[in-house]
Amino acid sequence: MILTLDISNEEFDGIIDGDGEFTPTIFLNFPSDIRGIYEFELINTVIDIYNFKDQKQNQGLHVKDDSLFVFGKMKVRIEGVKGADFKLIEGNLLAGSEQYYSWPYTIDSGDIVCKCGGKLSFLEDCYVALMIVTESKPKITLTFNIEETVPFDFMNSSSLEQANLKKVESKHMKSLGKLLISTFPRVFWIWEKSY
Image 1 (cartoon, helix red, strand yellow):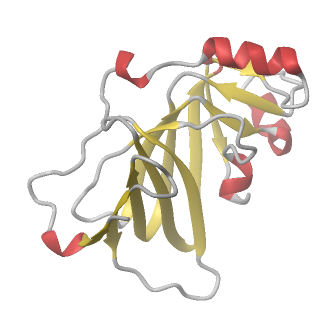
Image 2 (tube, rainbow, N blue to C red; image 1 turned 90 degrees about the horizontal axis):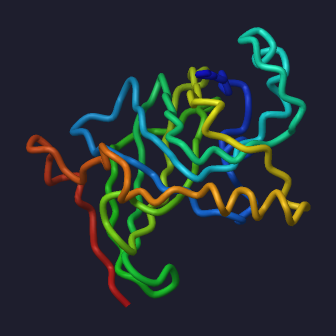
């Protein structure tokens, strides 16, 4: 069963895993123009679904759990995007080589900033941090197959064990994303820093 949650009125990084138990894998594309609608995918992600009881019931899902571990692909769709910053860290998070990609934007009163991070699907040993800036009233949805989830409680050791058993390796999945498309302007390559 496919479930779509509208999280437009919630804190983005409060819904997507923030407890550090798992590092999601992110499937990205780097378009030449990110404005408007941007979509990406995540696997191995913990999401907080506590505030979406009505949405779940309206779609015929009766789940009492507050959080889910989504081991299948979850599509994130953000409408109203103004710009973004992506930071890639290759190797050690504290001392690795950093690369920055930016789509210029201005932040106005009421604008929303969506943040999340995870392993990059198509480059081994590479972490990516996303900051996507939207207009004041964006539409943000998460879509995933409920059959590719398990209930999650970080205080429960058996729940952690179950989630760990369900983790998926991105190399076994299709459509890993891509770093650059042919029309990607060089102006968006800002700098590279190594320690």
